[in-house]
Each structure stands twice: as C-alpha cells, then as structure tokens.
Length: 503
Image (cartoon, rainbow, N blue to C red):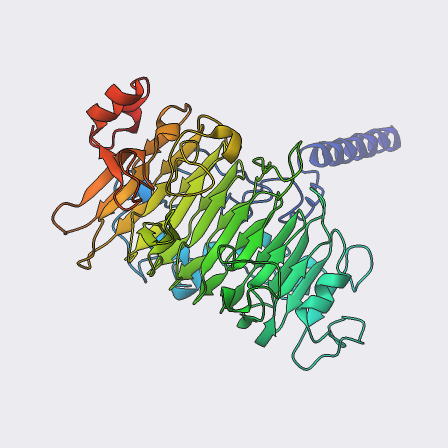
C-alpha cells in the first residue's frame, strides 16, 4: 500500500514539474532577437527620425511637436522638442546647432553618426567609406562601384581607393549609373563635362571624400557642365568660372558658371561657389522644341540645396526655361556685383538690373528657406517678364512667338526666405515681379523676411515689365506699379491677397 502511495505521490510531483515547465515556457518564453534596424532598410525605427535617416523617415510637411527634432518654428512653442531657449552645453540640439551639429556634439549627439552601433546612419553622413562596421564594405568598382580621384593618382589606374585616378574628368568619363566617385583633398584645374546619365533609382554621384577640401578651378567657362540626368554633385569648392575663355568651350557671355545644366533631375548640394560669373544655371536645351532653333521650357526638376554661393559677378542662381526646380536652404552672399548691360538700336550700352536669384519663362519653381546677404545691385529675387519683350532689347512689343514662353507664369512658391541689405546701395527691394507672373495662378508667397535700413526700401514691387520702361525706348528705367495699380492694369485680383506681404 505504501509503495502504491509513494508511486502516486511521485507521479503527482512529476506532473506538477512538467506542468510548471509548460507554464514557464508559455509565459517566460525567450523572445527571438529583433533584427538590427539600419538606416536605409525602409523602416523608420525608434532610433531614427527624418533628420537622422531621411531615407527611412519622411519629413512632415509642417513641424511635428514630439518628434524629438527642435525646428525653428517650434522654439518657445513646443516644449517637448525645444524645452527652452538653447545654447551649446544645455543638452538641447536647437535649430541653429542642427545646421552644423559638429560644432556642438555634446548637444547634437543624437543626430551625429555613431560608428559601431549597428545602424548605418546615412542621413547623418555615415557610409561605407567612414564606418564599415555599420554600413559594410564599399563595393570596389563593378555595376554599383565606388571610385576615387587623388592628386597623387594616375588616369591609367583602375580608380580603386588604392589606385585612384588623377583627374575628375577621367572619373566622369568612366562612372556609370549607380556608381559614386569620391574626390580627395587638393586643387584641380579642370572644366568638367558630364554626358553619362544615371537613372531614377541609380544616380551617379560626384562628391568630396569625407571632409576633404576639394577645390575646382574652372579651366573653361564652367566648373561642371552637366549634359546628363540623375547626377548628384556635392561637396566641391568651385571658383573662376568666367567667360574669359569665350569661344573655346561650351559658353558665351551669359552662360559662364560654377555649375550649368540644360537637363533634368540633377541635385547640386553642399557646394561652395565663388568668384565666378554666375553660381548655378538651370537652363533649357537649345533647339529642344518642335521647330529647329526653338527653345521650349524643359522638365527641369533639378534641386539646388545647402550651397554657399558668394562674390559672383551676376546672379547666384538663374533659372531659365526650366520647370519645377527647387532652390532651398542655400546661403547667397554679395552676389550681383556688376550691372547687366545690353545695346540699344543705335549701339549705345544700356544698363539694367539683375538679381542674386533670377527666373523667367517657366512653370513651377520653389524658392524656400534661402538667405540672401548684401547683394550689390538689384532686388533679391527677380522674375523677368519675357512675354512682353522681343529678342532684341529694348523693344518691348508683345512677341510670344519670338520668346516661346508661356503667356502666364504659374505655380511659383517663395517662402521662408531672409534678405539682408544694410549697405547704402540703390534699388533696395526684396521681390520684383512682371505681368506674366501676376496673370498666372498657383503662387504662394509667405513668411519672407526683409532686413533693410535704407530709406525707400521695399519688400515687393509689381511692374508691367521689370527690364524696361514700356513707355520709352531707352531701356533704363523700370516701370513700377503699386499693388492697386497692378490690379487695375492687369485685372489681377484673384490671388493678390495671398501675394501681398503687407497683409
């Protein structure tokens, strides 16, 4: 009997042990380790946001309180993101520090790349070239290769990191869709012409290597002349793009610039361009229309961002017959140092005003969050009314067949720009527009700031034609209307309230 009871107790104990094990397994089951999330995997993880990993996390249209990013509009409004007025050392990466987080790493460590954390933080500048632990080894050449250029290289090399090329042009002639070219420290005297295009998902990128200072002195009329699409150019210091070599290259009096493109879907970012005729030109293909020699506006869709363009003879950026381009987050300093000129019918030289940013004959343009400092002549932003002019200034008779421009200029966004003009110079105006702009639709002008202490300074001017007085034939004085006169003479009042910065 005792044996039976002992056996029964043993069975019960064993059953309890098994049951307990099952319950423990169910409730304390070890979870499988989550896969490491990397920037670029298409998942916006807990350690990522739109600033640290733009490829995974889409930036919201408006600032979002609580996304751990302190933006300018949130300072003093969103205590979650911007607890107080910030300074370096207070553990708050404020909007000004975010523009250059390396200046205050103690506050902005969260948006600085951390090599060795198993996250390839591409949005913060981490890559296979500076952190292989997180991003893996860079592929050497091949379909999606990485090439290198060095002053100590040789164009007969294979372009690898160990055996780089010597000239940027050699790399340009070799790179194919999806490939990247890194240019190492040094001064390169070249006029680079790019003719091989990338694709929408395989861009061709030309960049300085890591933080190297790469100076490109333009040998011809351009630093980079881009006759290709889906090209990215970033991190270069470009100078001396003048028309002094006129007749020897791809430019004439009005096309010398640090970067010029006649094509579409290119990105120009983080470059410094100075001591040149123009900074960046976005233009149409010549002879690209349905008739021989006709110039029609092209697709455009280029992006100009985070560049520093200064000390140019004329404009920092000029957009001509190229649609849907974006110019944002740039700094323009002391541009338009010369007055533009042309000849009248008798051959006399006439002067007229240009501007740091000029656009005309297009549909769709975004000018956002740029800083304009001390332009010498002209307004800050200028739209040229080309529909009312012929091919031979100063005659201003309407001639759209000659200009091949749309009758109206539509869908222009000008917002969040800041202009400074404190020197005692003439023509102190931030924005100047022509009739074709006013007769267009879809414009948005908002939150532009104009700092100017000069008497007679204006935020905005409306004119029948900026370039010349329509009642004279001397081409010297612009005809400027008040907003009321502008409405009366053009019949434009539908969007005037939206466009009036004084409301």
